[in-house]
Image (cartoon, rainbow, N blue to C red; front, side):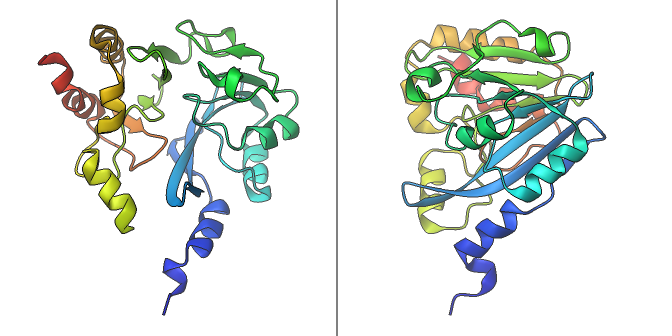
Length: 246
């Protein structure tokens, strides 16, 4: 008999209506939500940062439920909505309709994927004026078909990634567990093997990782996987040790 705790629909509803977790007082929050793609139940994580003008920076928006709208309205107005890479776009239409005054930034390649949406700008190496001097960002290079933007909030000492690293130790479903073990991102944070193999220009990837290692962070939030709360820079360096041994 399937109990309520193991019912995917119940899990989805519970996470959809959950309260955001505050990582740093009045500065940074995240919320995790169950999503089903290609028959596999995964968790996707949205990060919210309150900028110096009290407006919100939304990273990797999840499904926009009414409870989530209420929570966000209590934190402030939304200034910017960004996606880490071209794969994270499934709920953008809802946000685009709900927040017409927000600035929408496309990850590299996303404009071609979502030609139905109008973006205000494309994220690249430079930092837009909206969060200049507040957040750090860089383009993780080395794969012409898949480029990701990494962010860092120095105030909360948090590195925010999309799929560059994953830590899927909390996965219990056999299919998800097998995926995590095969890709080497179950026991510790790692770049999934299939993604790692797609980075053919290792020189450019090394440059990107070296830049990130100059940033001030202790916490790492991934779009998928368990949050690293402490000793993030050492864990990040260990995850890319293979890259510097070649």
